[in-house]
Amino acid sequence: MDHATVVVSGTKIAEEIGTSRSEVWRLVQQLRRLGVEIAGHPATGYRLQAVPDLLLPDVLAPLVRATIFDKHIHHYYKIGSTNAAAMEAAAAGAPEGSVFFAEEQIAGRGRGANTWHSARSSGIYCSVVLRPLLPPSEALIISLAAGLALHVAIQAIDPKLSPDLKWPNDLLLDGKKLSGILTEMNAEATRVRHIVIGIGINVNQASFPPELRDQATSLRLSTATEWSRVELTATLLKSLDREYRNLLEKPEARQSILRRFEESSSSVRGREVRVEENGGFEGTTAGLDARGFLQVRTAHGMRTVLSGTVRFLK
Image (tube, rainbow, N blue to C red):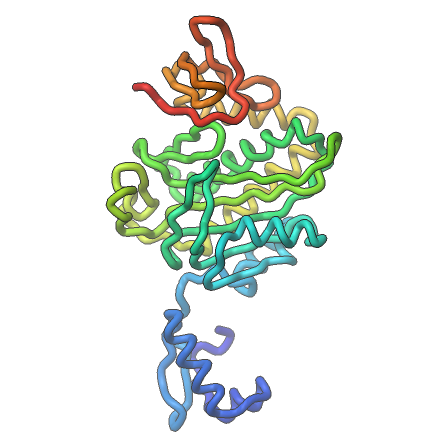
């Protein structure tokens, strides 16, 4: 990429990376299968023509310099789940700010028992490791901050878009799901050991499987424009870094997150819902409490939603 206009012989490449010309040919073929456009062949040399929109550490690190995410970026072409990889790495001591990206997930997970459709190199599938000095009871605020960070990132690139935050972990466009956030935690009774925030974003999908067409959308479908996944990812990580630092350093940040989440959500106040929790109940949403949990006014009084699925009635 540093010498994209230069024709380089297979012999020269082989010498530089310490391998044979036949191995260079094999690697070139592998890169081509991944979507990298390389002109030439062993007799004439190779020239890089175009690199696909891959979320590679060497590409992203310079764009997120001075954030907590710039030093430990991991990239996979195919993986089961970035959240599973991040949780395993965090348990083994991975530093705060470690980020795990996948071009494709074969076992992507959503909230509860849901799966996340992860078309190859069409969306952003990432998980970050955080180690906040917080008690477990306050972990929800970090998930809400992540939703806000994504909301801010999308509007920074296209101010005309107005994504809608659905408590606690979805981002909607035109009433359809654009993004989901899955937060998992390892904690003791009084402190968080680590939190993994998984973020799945539908970016350049041109279509979805039949069972998802009425429920899901992508930035490309909503704007009729192809988006740079690299640009959106870098903007998201910088936005998430700001939200996280403010939360840990500024006493007023918690109230700011709750206020801005409510302002960016059409559903946390005045929406008729059914909550699938403790046998299920219905009511009208009445804002967030001090910890970020959803309040629902029912015929029998105010109830707090701790973990149930919230479904709109209208």
